[in-house]
Length: 57
Length: 338
Image (cartoon, rainbow over all chains, first blue to last red; front, side, top):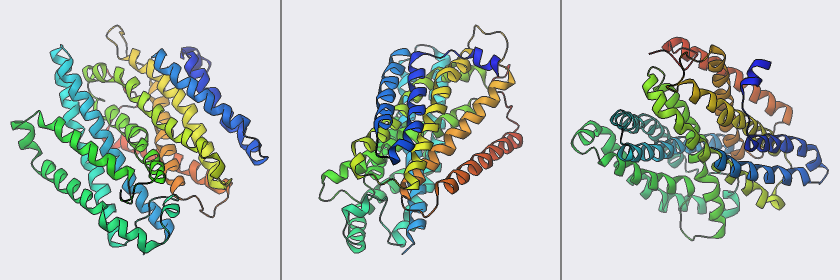
């Protein structure tokens, strides 16, 4: 497993996309309580990640 | 009249078929243009071959969507998604739209595609440049059919919502299936892999754009969203697609591309084949689940049930994937030494 991770070269765009996915998951219990901060954050991170993905690759 | 759940399933297969047709046309044009612009004779031949071979997924998508459309028409169930209910006050009004506007386009699409499919060998031989024209005309027809499942009469702002939820399927689930097809098609030729794999990044960019349209459309319409189990399920699956997509389109694609480059002397290890297989299965299962879930917003199942079905589906598709590999004797590692 460590070997596989070591072979991966993650760029900044992918870190942002990963954070967008995680943020979307975190947002779900908060959405039920009426807070959409993480849900919005997921969109912002996704947008930034995709823009950087186009620049990176 | 079909029950609404069954209708949703019928429409799901129609959209799936159209998305596959649209994506095959889009990437058929792409590789055809690349064949014309590249100066390397070897690559030119491969790109032309790929462009022609994309006729296979096109035909598959055409057959699925046409059969399903016929079922939809004969059952007089024209609605395509939850949003259709907002557009039409009653079912008879909906049927009128279907009967008046959509069949004309569908019939044009069916006759045009059938004429090309039946005489494809003749067209390809005599007029090879017509393949691109065929893809272009078909793409425009598919784009309209997938964006306006209930007709284009009395265009309103609500129709924009249809457009946003229709054509992105060509970029998302359609392109995901084309990536799978390209993996399958190039499995036995290292030369083809070297020519095609670097373009996976371009295909991935379209998938990200398509997902972005879905993702941001939900955000814009946040005020209208009901917090149902299906909504939470869609969000979880979207997160899975983003995280899996981030791994697949980024580092994994890089490993795959470098694994087939001319500079590399030994093939990639088997583990990368297994990882790419799992990632591909997650991608396909998640996209189909997401598309179907948006058509069934009020399905009476709890989130736990929906997630359990999703996991079972993942396992079943992975077993099917292994079975197909075993049946067709495709090596798990997509890189071989020939």
